Amino acid sequence: MLVLNKSKSMYNSKIIGLGYYVPDNVVTNDDLSKIMDTNDAWIQERTGIQQRHWIPEGSEDTSAVMGAKAARIAIKRAGLTAKDIDFIVFATLSPDYFFPGCGVQIQDMLEMDTVGAIDIRNQCSGFVYAISTADQYIKTGMYKNVLVIGAEFHSNGLDKTTRGRGVSIIFGDGAGAAVLTREEDTSKGILSTHLHSQGKYADKLIVASPSIRNWVPELLANPEDISYFPYMDGQFVFKNAIVRFSEVIKEGLDKNNLSVTDIDMLIPHQANLRIAQFIQRKFGLRDDQVFNNIMTFGNTTAASIIIALTEAWEKGKIKENDTVVLAAFGSGFTWGSVIIKW
Ligand code: UT7
Image 1 (cartoon, protein in one colour):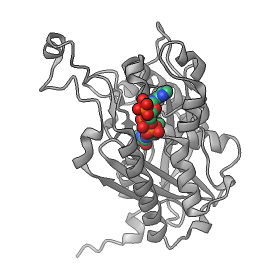
Image 2 (cartoon, protein in one colour):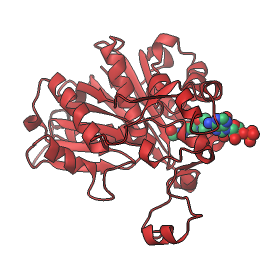
Image 3 (cartoon, protein in one colour):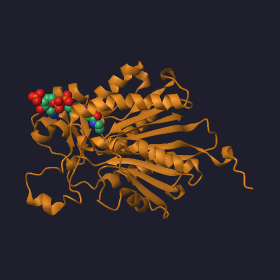
Image 4 (tube, helix red, strand yellow):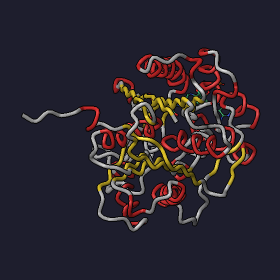
């Protein structure tokens, strides 16, 4: 009889390389006030955002191209080459093509072997879902090194008129990447991931078109239909975000018998600085226990956590053995958390 020794067949995964890339082009709140009826004071007060990076016209950058740039940095820092990567997980809501996904473009751009690649479509929770997916492949032993990317090219899809100001001031372009590898010590690395969804509220934060049921000819025939721009019921999303962020962070801590005081670094999805500050207050966390960079990058959706994680790590704010918590909430609704022993 075959007896599976569970402790030998299961691994943890750990992050061994991080990188991010944003386009050089900085768009300040004052820049936005020249193209729509908004102002720096309103944007900073409601969101904390001071500027974002937007891909300028004529640039070669796209979600896949930026993802590849971030990935090259992460792979190098991991001490690996693209040939060492066994699998690609790419999270984005702004893919280069309707299909195929961005993951396969990374396989080509990085001249990798014909490894598998999947795209994750979970918007602001995309990176948490992507990490969780990569973690499962590593845990089972199927793959050793998995490249996880979150990238967004929002700026070309936003309504940059006063009509769209409630949404378009928030979003920024950028990409981040992480290399996950097998960790034999199961008390280290990614300890657990927690994922949720609630499709009932899909229409509260949505880009509804073009879709197969409202395709380009239909859109062109109906100039009133602007459902190709993101729609958000901001206050409803905000209220749900603070509840779900809190729940899913608590769920992750409880699962690992940790308490709030054990958190060395919380990296919340950078949706709105006010949401992150609410969570910080609710859990009674000190400033040095939470990392935010929405002020300079805006909300980069699937890229936000990985850009923030990389920046925090580059600044020496994450050290060996730290308990790091990632948490996200967004369109779907989807939400989730990741508990890491660094
Ligand atoms: O990342 C995925 C998850 N996303 C989120 O978690 C975002 C959650 N929601 C939010 O962050 C906030 O709801 C927003 C920042 C999007 C909006 O802030 P708000 O405090 O909810 O504003 P509001 O949409 O209720 O609008 C308040 C007022 C309105 O004017 P009236 O009707 O009171 O006269 C808006 O027309 O502010 C006006 N407004 C603006 N004014 C200047 C809306 N956008 C702007 C703007 N500049 N950009």
